[in-house]
Image 1: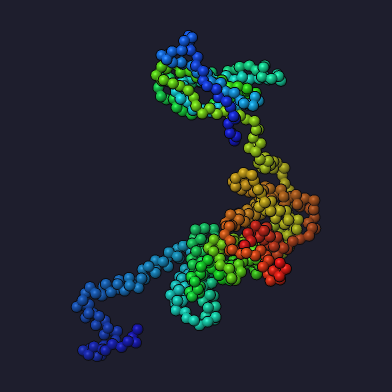
Image 2: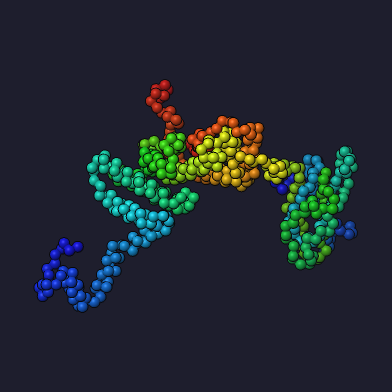
Length: 216
Length: 302
């Protein structure tokens, strides 16, 4: 997770209610939040992180382009990648109500690749809370294939000492190695103790010598 | 101690002097029993002997020298010189030089008390030596800026020779880190120079051990290709740079100089030429080549 979150446009949550009239008495129990990516390019989701605010259950659906289908977003389908994920152990109590959560791609039911849009469905069946939502939604993608975090090449060459080496007449590698290691360590000590303190010399390699000065 | 003649007691003319003294002190103690007992302690505390001995023992424990008596003798003679040096008058050049030599040798002694691997002891000894050298020339403006360049260079030269380095071996090092006579050396630079000399002396000693290990027998010089292979691994390890943290760099460098890698390098070097008829490299050249690897990394003072 070495890159920041991708830019996304988070739309206002839409509440789902039964009935046409919206009254103040009825508080919604379901909110749906859509997230779109401004460039219109599909992303591979690595992680979705957010801060909870009294939501009890979370479902995530992805608008995904099908594999093997190279047309545009028109052929994308909605799939559920997270179903009723509990954010609060008990919807009526405080536990988990303001926690930070991260949902990783390994936890998702489907592979979140070629995703155009993300829909978060929040449910809070308890009537104890006035409002519920989630904040600070960040989606991380995995466009870079972490090349620099791969195994360095020298590590793999450590274990290929399979062939027996003919060491007749050669000095003992252990002794030689230990001497060299000490020499290396001494050089490192000297290097790490170099300071940038200067003695305030103005000339470099004697450039203030009279012979040279006379030419300027 | 019997130069001061006390009048022998008229009542006891025939007793020897020490007996008379004992009698007299016995008489005194009879009359003032507490004074004598306290005189010893008072005397010791007035002279500050407790502090003196404690300091000496602390330094001895810190240095852990093999010759405790010699160490203590040097310590006390240094202290005596410190007490006497403000007395130095305006005798001119000769006196100044003698004073300077004394201070240099004392500074060298201080620095030699702890090996450079005992970092905190070495640092504190270097600080003591620095302060000592700053006292040089009490008539100057308090040595603003640091130790005189000439004194610093002399000290480094002394350190190198004490570390067993020959003049030719230490010359390239001094070329890089010496200071001109008129320059003032601040403490950080002083410490760095002293540490570099001490480390370089160890490094050269190690390279001599390495040569002894690489050459199969002491009388014969070592095979040139072999020497080059061995020094090449050291050079590769030193030149390791890694985009990652220092830890990764150390790991990679230490992998390059592990016994397995060295065996491989040596076998490869020896491989095509099993007859051993190649040219040889003598000890001095080996040492010089190894020294170059070290010196190229020493920052030139500017």
